[in-house]
Length: 108
Image 1 (cartoon, rainbow, N blue to C red):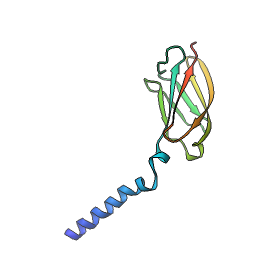
Image 2: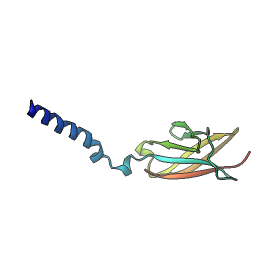
Image 3: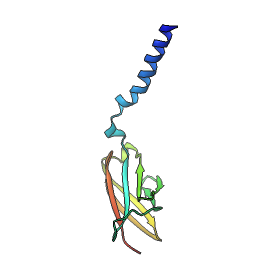
Image 4: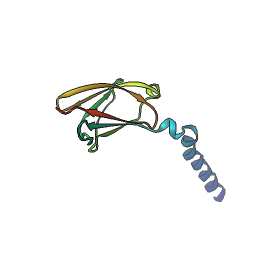
């Protein structure tokens, strides 16, 4: 019984560690986008952000949104379309794992 528990603990430990060993944080960290008001610098909540590959999300109360982007979109310029207050803005942004970019939206 003791050998079975030890073997199970070893197997469980290996299964838990494999993702961390195979995928460093720099490869798995999300890209963060923050939509801000051009005049005040305050985050813009509830803006719809669409990535060129069709992935969509809505900004949080502080204007931020996280994207776990496909590795094909990392380390290059990616087109984002931001819709808020009846206006649409399209920007090309450099995307990298763990990156953060603020996009100012003009006042309506």
